Image 1: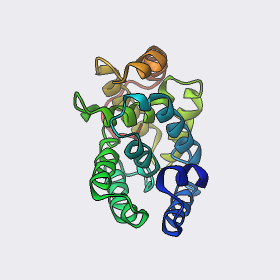
Image 2: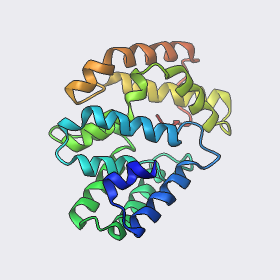
Image 3: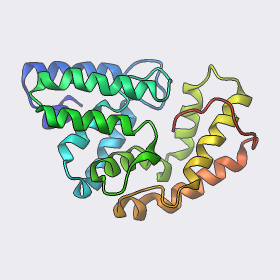
Image 4: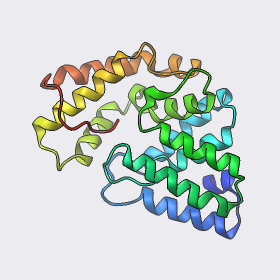
Length: 210
């Protein structure tokens, strides 16, 4: 993983130290889905989609930071991850304009449906983050999400999870880049619909993250 980080952030001592910190964060024992495997998957998906990005380097850096802080607090985790990027990236020699773009992209992942038309970098990052929904590992992903929210009672989790799925299914197009729509849109909608059908159908409650 550090080789992949160095490829985008450089090989200075400071950059490698930041990379080691990020790997350690993504390896925290309480993570079940938002772990190194998820980071690898998002980076791989970015590789498939980065032709649509305006600044692929910023998108890759944002992928590294987007769940770097993960305490199971949607919105707050993304904000703290963005702040971490703002604190660490200048040490790596990343120019201020790109640091600001990375932080903006990280904040976008708190609610993927806030990406605006024409936001090429936001579209690529959010599509890559949601690629799991259209992949072969959807069932394992759903189980891992439940494990991360093991502290939430079943009834509340089902309600919150159903709320998340309904919101995602309600958007006209889940993915914003043409490549992602072709690769994952149909399968993602089918998988989410199946999971939603298995839930209690109750609405409200805590809203687990995607």
